[in-house]
Length: 64
Length: 171
Image (cartoon, rainbow over all chains, first blue to last red):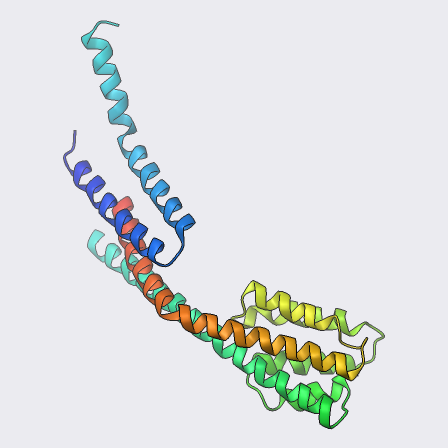
């Protein structure tokens, strides 16, 4: 697994957290929630293949 | 090359954020121009007993674009005497020129509802209608003033942060 993905996820987390705070302070809670969801979707899109690999490994390990 | 691309994306997003942050100021300027035009229309109706055509022609020369364009085109079309209702002509002009203005959706709706009175009522109702619109503009200007500083900071922050987010996703 490429370690840069961890830094990328951390960077998205920081950016989404700051955006969330800025939008909440401006009274735009709906947009803040949408931004958080968008960040979550982006990160999930990146890690979905690793989750799939994890499930495959678990299946192989326990001979399921 | 990646670095240059990233810098360009962040710069463009920053500039767009700054442009959006000034959007409310532009809207306020347009609303103030509209208020000036309405005050002229009111004065023309009250003291000169002018028709809508004459009042709009008088007002369009004394305010800046794009409000002057709206009044000028409206007066021209009324002057053509094609038998159309003033309300319909007013709505058409507003629809055509709304892209040149910074008015928000609610401002456009208020302007269109103002057009319903044109050509149907006596001067006292016309004056009341204009007063109502002026009151709306005053209220919106106060609202914009109270929110402008907060919105300016928000749009600038969102510009920078969204630029960084795009770069991060594309990297």
